[in-house]
Amino acid sequence: MANHVQLTVNGADIPLAPAPPHTTALDLLRERGLTGTKEGCAEGECGACSVLVARPGTDRPTDWVAVNACLIPAAALDGQEIVTAEGLAAGAADGELHPVQEEMAVRGGSQCGYCTPGFVCSMAAEYYRPDRCAHPAGDTGAEHGPNGFDLHALSGNLCRCTGYRPIRDAAFAVGAPGEDDTLARRRDEAPPAPVATSYTQGERTFVRKDTLADTLRLLRERPDATVVAGSTDWGVEVNIRSRRADCVIAVDRLPELRELRTGSGHVEIGAALTLSEIERGLAGSVPLLADLFPQFASRLIRNCATLGGNLGTGSPIGDSPPALLALEASVVLAGADGERVVPLAEYFTGYRQSVRRPGELIRAVRVPLPLSPVTAFHKIAKRRFDDISSVAVAFALDVRDGTVRKARIGLGGVAATPIRALATEAALEGEPWTEATVEAAARVLRGEGTPMSDHRASALYRSAMLGQSLKKLYAQTTAEVSA
Image 1 (spheres, rainbow, N blue to C red):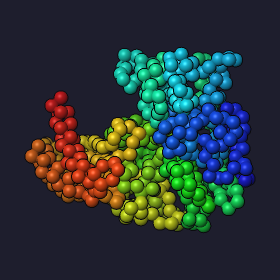
Image 2 (cartoon, rainbow, N blue to C red):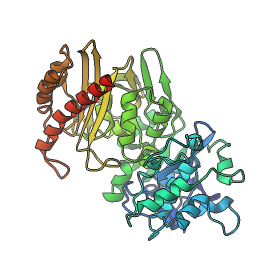
Image 3 (cartoon, helix red, strand yellow):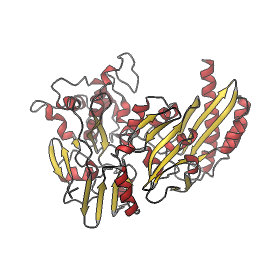
Image 4 (cartoon, helix red, strand yellow):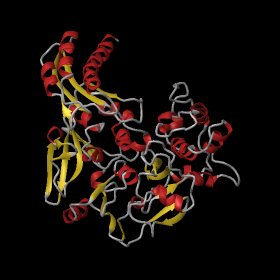
């Protein structure tokens, strides 16, 4: 592995040197004159920095995936193929715009223009989604257009002029890519393969190994290293808090961490699969996770974020732990000396602390089968999408013949760690699934955890929302039964 990192951007090779290893893709692009990629928040919330990356596809060899360039270390894109807003019109005739750019211009979607390149890149990723045009023309609504465009593709992009209607009009007006579209044809070829990377400037190093075994050996040598996958958490630390690591080890492309398998006893989800990849791979077969994914940040974030990263940070307000606790999931921890399986309910030991030992990685998450038939994920936040939860509640109940045979409830935002609502589970199990039972259990649920007051919500509000969440679940299931 030579000390050389090179990205292919709009068809041209761009070296990382002499920039330091912590340089983000956004900063590298702007330093090379590609100033269409903007910095708005540097936290992955505004989407002004979005670019397209060629990634392994589902229906085709390659998918064009939109990501936040402000969060990803440029070194993590070593050998990868990137397209910015400037490169979108490369396949068009001289002087012509890309169809997405054209629609944004003629329908007034550009407005002040600051956010436009980011919107255009996110919109282009949806434009090139292989099954978009197969969406039934009659199945439309506020969030889906007659052309199959899913507005959730733009959930991570913010317009500072608050002029979303013309942007939506542009999204719903784009047609299908033409046969002469260079980027559309590119989808029929394989994306660049991951490459081993070792890049050092001064005393700081960015490393990506070829295999899990090599990575674990390096971790044993460097237990102080920072491990990154999608970098949606570490990227914020670098940008906002000026954190720097002497050694960063990337695990996002390790094949051993990117498998999705369903066996007779469990579903095993690779820790480095992105949430978008998991969502597509499971295709709704785990309903609780299918309920979670649309509420987890934005599509831009889900295109990079991983379950391994979400669990590895140990945040008490992470969205996936409550759902995985309700599913009775376990984590597979891999170290140089072997693997061990730990129930997620025993994984967290304190605020951002866990049983994971120095030198260990989360290799996979296992969800046992069969699944409980009654599930729901309730996220209480100030915005419907792309927000941090004040409280998150996940339910997985087995209700048969009117009786709660089994209850599992995961909670986030009410303690120093994600927790199971054990007292509420006990109050439900063996009882009839009736309004009286739910009222009594809701009183118990309001007392679970040790909620605190902060800028997102008061302790009293959090407790109240816990009880209301169970009542909402009962109302939803009663309506379903009546229907």
